[in-house]
Length: 444
Ligand SMILES: Cc1cc2nc3c(=O)[nH]c(=O)nc-3n(C[C@H](O)[C@H](O)[C@H](O)COP(=O)(O)OP(=O)(O)OC[C@H]3O[C@@H](n4cnc5c(N)ncnc54)[C@H](O)[C@@H]3O)c2cc1C
Image (cartoon, rainbow, N blue to C red; front, side, top):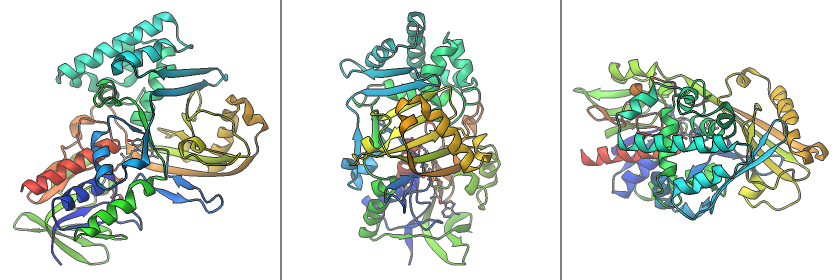
C-alpha cells in the first residue's frame, strides 16, 4: 500500500505532523520503534498503586499555541488545565518558604513583576534589578540580531551581566531556567531562557504565562487520541517498527526499510527522530555532521507515595538541593484519599544518572525534610525513572547547529524539538516543528 507521507517517530513532533496531514486528507503511515506512542513524553500504569506515572512531570504554558492547536485537533483540550494565575511555591534547603504569586490584572510583564516584588527572600535592590531582565527581553524581541549575543553567554553569565545577584539567580531565575532548559546555569546558553521568557511575557494569548497541567497521564492526554485521529482518516500507525534506512531513487527519498526487512513507500519521508537516533540513518552528509554536536542532558523523576499529605501546594521549587521541583499529583489529578502522591524532578541530572536508584531515593528522603510534615510521614511506595536522553544539552554554540525544520533533501523532511524553531527543546518546539514539516509536505 502506498502512502502520501511516511512519518517516522510517534512523539509530539510525529503525532502533530501526522494529524495535521490527516486533517488535510493525506494518507499517512506513522512508524514508531517502541511498542507505544509518546516518545519522550509518555506514561504507564504503576502496578502497585494503579496510578499513572509520567516518565517525568511535564509542564505546559499558555503560550504553547501550537500544542494547544494539536490537542484541540484530537479532542484533548479539556484534559489540559491552565492555572488562573502564576502560582509557584519555593522552599530552600533550610526550610524557608517563598511564594511567587502574580495576579491576572495587568499585562503579563507587570503581573510577573508584581509577583517578583512580593517574594520574601529577595532584597528591595534585587527586586528592582529584576527589571533589567524584563528590559533585555524587550530588546531581544525587537532586534533579532541580539539573539546571537545572548546565545554565546551562559545563563549565569547573562544574568550576571544584567546585575542579578547570586541570590536572585538561585531563588528565582535558576529554578525557572533549569526547568525550561534542562541544563545548569553555568552550562546552558542563555538564548533558550530568553526565548521562553519572551513567550511567557508576551501576553498573547492572555494566559501565556500560566502553567498548564495535564489532568491525566501523558499518554492518556494525546497518544491514543492521535492514533485514532490518523486511523479514522485512512492512515495507519505501526508500533515496534524501527527504521534502519531510507530508500532513495534518483536522489529523491521515497521509502524506508525497517530493521526486520519490511519496506514502505511514500511521496514524502518525514523524520522526527532526535539527533542521536537520526545520525544512525543514511541522511545527507551535511546534516549528519551537525548531528554529532548534540550532547544530551538527563532528567530523573521520582514518584513517591506517602501515607499523608506533606504539602498543599501544587508545585514547589526546591532551592540549593539536588532535587529541583516537587509536584503534588493529588492536586494536579484531583486524586481522592488521604495519602499523597508526589512527583519529584532532578533536571540536568548528569551526576545523579550514575547513582543507584536507592542512593537517589535516600537523597530525596533527606531533602524532603524541608517539608515539616515529611518527618511524620510513612513512605508507602516509590519508583524512579531515569531518562538519560531527555533533551539536547543547549550549550552556547549549539543554536547554529540546529537545522530548521523542513526539507533537507528532495522528499526528505525533518522535524523534532531539537530543530531550530526559535524555542528551546520542549513540547511546543516539537509540535511547532511537526506543524511546519506537515505544511512543507502539503505544499509540495
Ligand atoms: C522527563 C522529561 C521531562 C520533560 N519535561 C518537559 C516539560 O515540562 N515541558 C516541555 O515542554 N518539555 C518537557 N520535556 C521535553 C519533551 O518531552 C520533548 O521536547 C518532546 O517530547 C520531544 O518530542 P519529539 O517528538 O521531538 O521527540 P521524541 O519524543 O523523542 O519522539 C521521537 C520518536 O521517534 C522514535 N524513534 C527513534 N528512532 C526511531 C527509528 N529508527 N524508527 C522509528 N522510530 C524511531 C522514538 O522512539 C520516539 O518515539 C521533558 C522531557 C523529559 C524526558
